[in-house]
Length: 610
Image (cartoon, rainbow, N blue to C red; front, side, top):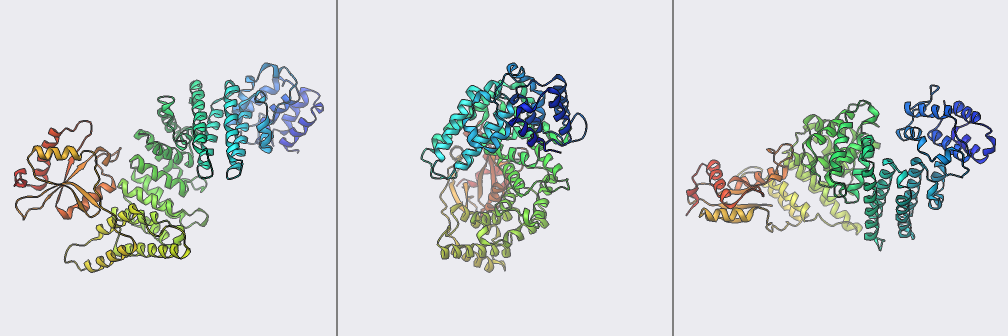
């Protein structure tokens, strides 16, 4: 049987071969069982090219095909959602076309096979949303292929001009899929273009792409009654593109992001499986929300996490989240300060450790370190089996495949999770030493970790520090000397953080002598109270802010805050003072200090006055 697309192309070349509506319907009927993806699009193009109006019987057949997602006569492939949309909106075509006005209209494959054609096509001929989408994709592909070449700026400028023209001329014919396609194209172009430093007008290009994005959001607002029809992937597209362009849709349409995220959450539990988001959509949505620092509702994040968990139950590896999906999910949850359930976290980590054994699906070093960093920050319980598998995989990778940051993140994370030991830390130092020697020999790459990474290593080493007189003290000192040889000790400059000034004023109000910003290894105490009785321990005062806890579990401190408190314990009794920027006053903080110090140290506040 002749392939549907090629048969339609042949007929388009020779429209005289179609003598009646009956022959058109016969072609539809005969190819219905083997019609390809472009079949349903091709017939509509053929009707227009041949200047024919489809019969009522043919339109009825194609609508049934479109609505049911299968040929009306049984058998055949299922249509995609976009193809079904095409069939159900046939009547949206101009009446003049349906009456048979002779005009040469573009076909979908005209754009697919010839990007130059897309740049020259008459916008008035883009009479249907499907053609508009093909046109947008062709222009995007042409612009992407030009990046890195001599005409990249001209190509991107041409894309912006054509998008402006399209939105001005064809907006009434565009649906939410078209607007989403423009938003996606703009984001993908910016994501690719910013990697090149050969642009002289990169800021202008970004400004132009953002302007196109904002026009599309205005178009979506006009289709607000149709937004309920957006699929999970289309919602992911708009939100992901917004984050990539550095924009928040709420700035253009207030409340839009709230609506889209809750709609996405609803689709995670849709009746039909093909309506539910896949792993990439879930990971991309969470990544975008975290990138925009959007305070997503806990129920939305939990719904997306539950969907990821359900995808992990599949036996099809193509459906299960891959390493990048897992890493993006953990990174986003860390930035959102939202801890997933134990079942979700465990399932994701077990899957990641299993992927380490599959050559084509193995994670990058960044994926492993990001997942472990998120687990440490969120206070997640990780099985020793998973930790050992991921650590073994990372340390067995060649040093050229692992960045300094990945080693340092992992070492610090293991300390927070209380899994780091002397042997493991020595392995990290050995890898860092090898990487340094390699960089110096090759004459490229960084010679040593940066200040932040060095601080992580020193904090991890501080966690390993044994008590005075311990048999391990000598081994720890050797590690300390080795670390000093690998990286210089980072500076311990004090950092003025919110609430410190109020704390000091409150102590002055109480008549308390204190030391401000006392360095303790790589951490700083906000204030230290020294008792007049030398046998008593000093009170180490640290402020506890709302952002120091998880959004869905405020009582659980973030990993770096918990480690700070742990590292300060050898210097005295750690006393946390709650600080609320909107409500804490100096007077109220003075009361809190007295209550907290007496409760934690067991000494009256007067014990620290002298």
